[in-house]
Structures are given as C-alpha cells and as structure tokens.
Length: 167
Image (tube, rainbow, N blue to C red; front, side):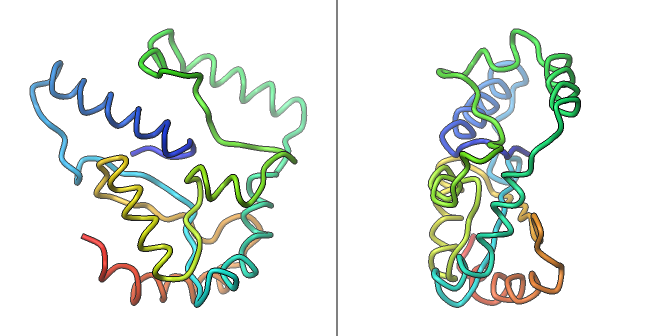
C-alpha cells in the first residue's frame, strides 16, 4: 500500500516492489497485492466537484505545522529512512506536498487527488491502476475541513457510478 507521492514516483515504487518480490522472494505480486491511497471525490460535474471540495483539499495540503512539529517530523523521517530507502528512485523522492505553493491543479495533475464527475474519476482511477499495477484503491474521504455529511453524496456517487466501471 502506498500513497502521498506523485503517480510517477509511486509507479517507480511499485515497479521496485514487484522486482524485489520476484528476485528476492520468488513470487510475482498481482494487482490485488498492490494498493494506492488517494483523496477521492465525485460530484455530478467536474466544475461542481471542484466547487464542493477545492477548499477542503487545499486546507488539507496547505496545513502548516509549527517549527517544532516540522523538526519532529523531519527527525522521525530521518530515523526511519536508510540509505536504501529511496536508492531505487531515479530522482529525489517527492513526498506529501505542503504549504502555500500547493495548487488544486498540481494535486490533480500529480495524482495526489482524484476529483471530478463519475466519468473523470473512473478514468483517473483506471490511469492509476495502469500506471501502478494496483488493484486496490483506498479513498480518503472526508478530508481537510470537509464534514462527514458533505462526503456522503460523493461516496454514493462513487458506489453507483464509478465502482461498476472498475475491475
């Protein structure tokens, strides 16, 4: 299970996972062995989806931590990472974006979020499945400042209009 990085970076991670599993462990992971987590929101149109959730997703990604919290998080990340942690990547690891430079367009374009009408969400989920070889999608909803009751309509649309079109 992976998430909180660009689709391109996660594709590299899942490719490494499959290669390692085959070469070092003697088995080939199938789509049901690979999952991705994404903030996901469905509405009746792309414009309505953006109107309903842009503020919430930006609240989530723009959330700022205090200096002390940032130092603690940095320390935790350094402690759990070794020289091998990201050595298979062809470029620097791109993690969870934070701060004021985060835009709605970037979050969608980099694959951090899957937001739109049922057709758009179906297409984006399939693109993630193809790029990552993932058969499991864990949707984060509600997110940011979104109240649970605001998420119910999206969950219902996802169940009725998106899930039947996924394998």
